[in-house]
View: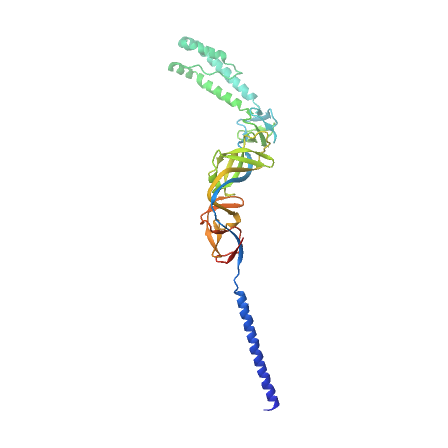
Length: 372
């Protein structure tokens, strides 16, 4: 072999040896990388052992004050609206029995007086016959005639004792005229509208000078001495409430007592809760207004054999993570009561380590260590 051949052969050998060494190094690096990636990932979680006990708790719900009575004020007769004893204005307060407004009634009064006058004429025409044919009844009919005044309400009809007398009076239209007059007297009272309760006008649609028509709204009013607080309660918690149950009402510096007036038997589609109405009419020296937000606190709720964890620790409505053999497991629980921040439950064996925090992207069988 010449020198050139030996040089080429030596170079080839060196390259092969370097390749083998480089391949060996790469294999070791890959092995270390695989060993590193197969290292076990351990999560740290907060968990506590389940221990059941009897708990006294309360239920809070916030809602809005409303009136127990809403009334749309309208007239049953047609005519010009005249002022009453209070201003027909939005926000105007009034007392029970005050005249809210009047409807022009002079024509109706005169028509009623004319009808009574015709009735007296008819009655005067039959008095001689009554004296002859119904001697026992004459004195009471004469007394009725004398008491009838065209400007006053018509007296009650005298007692009719016999069928013959009844037929006689009916044939002369005495009975039908009397009932017609009573009807007109009732209608005349509708020209004055009195307040049915203590309240205020929340809206006014027509003022004095306008023409009122039967059934057309003139104003809307609410009762201010009978108030209630409407609060939404989760359907799962409604079992802890009952009609007549006491409640503490809180709003800023206001603090007073109320009681449940009624509980709805339906779920509000918007809030998915049951409306509960608390009577707060018994308050004294407290300025409470329609539309004001308040919180009702229902206390005295006793839960037996329950354990408490934060609300965020529960997922899928009724599932929690427990730690078993240092691994996460999903378990179902029986929720007894839900509050704003905590949940009371049972259904797990006592001593079970339940995770009492929210876990993000957690899956079953993940190895964990408990933070003490």
